[in-house]
Amino acid sequence: MTKHRHTLDVVDLTIEIPNGMRLLRDVSLNLEPGEVRALVGESGAGKSMIGKAVLGILPSALKITSGEILMEGHNLGSLSPRARRAAVAETAALIPQDPLTALNPVRKIGPQITDPLVRIRGWSASEARKRALDLLDRVHIRAPERVMNSYPHELSGGMRQRVLIAAAFAPSPRLIVADEPTTALDVTVQKQILRLIRELQRETGTSVLFVTHDMGVVAKISQKVTVLFAGKVMEDAPTRDIFTDPGHPYTRALIAATPSHADPNRSFSPVPDSLIADLHRQIAQDDSLYRGARP
Amino acid sequence: MADATALPRARGPRSLNLRLWLPAAWLSLLALAALLAPFIAPHDPLAQDLLMERLPPFFMAGSEPGYWLGTDSLGRDVLSRMIYGARVALFVALIAATITCLFGSTLGLLAGYYGGWWDRVISRLVEIWMAFPPVLFAVLLVAVMGTGLFSVIAAIALIDWTRFARVIRAETMVQARMDYVDSARIGGANRLTTLAGEILPNVLPSIVALLMLEMGIAVIVEAILSFVNLSISTDDPTWGSMIAEGRGAIHFAWWVLLFPLIALFLTVLSFSTLGEGLKQRFDPVLQ
Image (cartoon, rainbow over all chains, first blue to last red):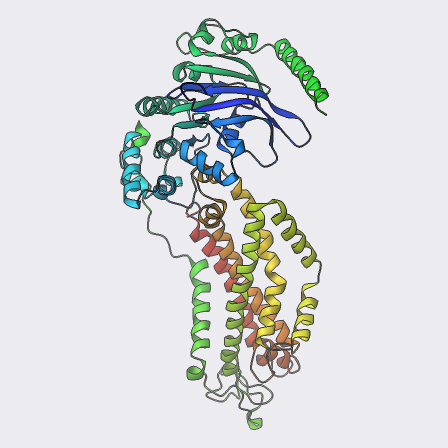
């Protein structure tokens, strides 16, 4: 074993759909305690799928065909479903993409935050309530008592996302998967939400796996980056290096495709079709090798 | 952070919802009449008086005071028979629909959320079941089990559980795909807790609406079975048997047939309207 334990190790993870098509191809990444790793790529690259696999909420049609997920050193694949669920609940939490469907519409906000606290941490109802109020306060909700007694539809999208952030941090998880938490929000709210996640992350020292397609967000929040294309890791590097000296042509193209708020006159260009075609050709070659190698 | 100050909307005074209150009023009236039948029925529903046969209702010439809705061809009071008939109708509606709902909804929830083998077995069962023509199935069941209240209730439950199973399965599948279900699972909830605590409350409005609809259907099925003499013993007055008896005399004593028919119509309409109204009322989003 290594000296310091990683919060999360994903080792050579491959996920297939029943017809044998690979959606993730030997993906490896790790998260050290207190680290924020961004997972970038275009839609369909499989970045959300990695988060789902880690949290054990993959749709039942998708199968992990090889590779391992280790959470604080425990191999989730070797645990029984019940033990795996307990390990995930104990360690991890999710900040979901869509604040509209991530809260149960017919239940009040309060119990939706406190239920897991009672379940996972074994706290009493009043302790859990205190913790929930404290966190709602820390995500700058001004009338926490009132929000606890509201239904989700009574809150705005930004408020709901704050509630979800509070709910994710409430059980003091060591790992948070943030699945494009700002994508469904409008631009003005995006910034506040991003700042809030970074603030809480620094205070608590939680590791965050931050799924996004926005290179601008990557620069603001993460220390490390994994660039994904068609379910394959293109590059894995510290964020600073990625922007100053991108190692892979696809990463370079992604950065070139990002408009800059600071410098609106800087030109930006879409990822060239020829590069995408090349990458797909390489991956198809890998896939046929992979298939040939299997009995 | 302007949105952080946005507070839950205050709810204005709700206008009186007639779609909810009219059916509720009729059904309460009926329930009260059924409960208090021995005290409020003006006559013994079984007492025959051949001198008083086919008396017209109170607003027609030749009516007798005290026989508000007239009498049938054996001189029995129509109003009293209708009040006693409401007992049977409501009892069957309540018990049969509740049993049907519990059984069908449970299977629907399990099939919709657990999927896999649960879904395969339950869905095939529903398909096979629905291949039987329902009325024939009911008549057959009662014929085999013998007439009586219990047989009628069993027949309704055995035929109609598929309605709940199908609809609730579909609704459950929609809910099961929502992110809040994933969130609950990550929060350490097991499958049964998730189903009962997260999904069921979202499906409940549909269950209530279906339950009300089913009560209406149960009233009809009971009326059909007593119309063909397959419900409870012919001595006891039911709306169905009154309609059957009134059929022969429709040209000269239409009231024997019409009044129970109106009661039946209003009751079934009330149940389905109330179901829709309650569904909207229950749903915090639609409210």
